[in-house]
Image 1 (cartoon, rainbow, N blue to C red):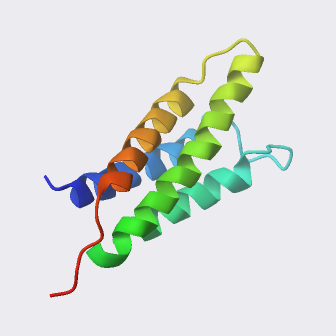
Image 2 (image 1 turned 180 degrees about the vertical axis):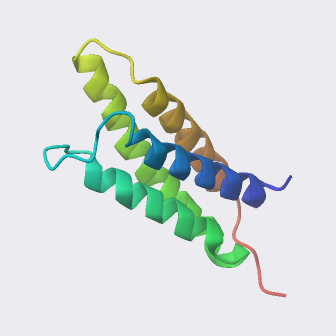
Image 3 (image 1 turned 135 degrees about the vertical axis):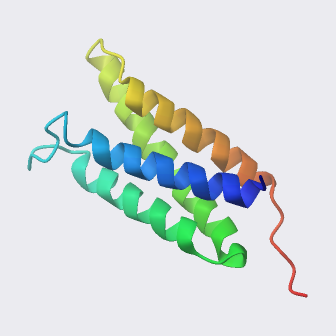
Length: 111
């Protein structure tokens, strides 16, 4: 599996996992500070995953960086309350790992 394909699969899994996590936690409330960033994260990851290879690399890097920022903030928010947000922790770790992988990729050169 290539790095780009791994990135696409990871982006879809993190996006769908984040979106699905909004339902059992009753996060569709207007007072949820993470609702809009979570929805932006979901859309950004899905759009980046659907782009052609040449555009996907920088788009996935940006989306994974944004995703990591949102999810690490969520992990910290849980930690302040004395809890562990395992979903946010897994998502943030995955986003950080994929961001590092995409930082190391060189952009494709036109043929």
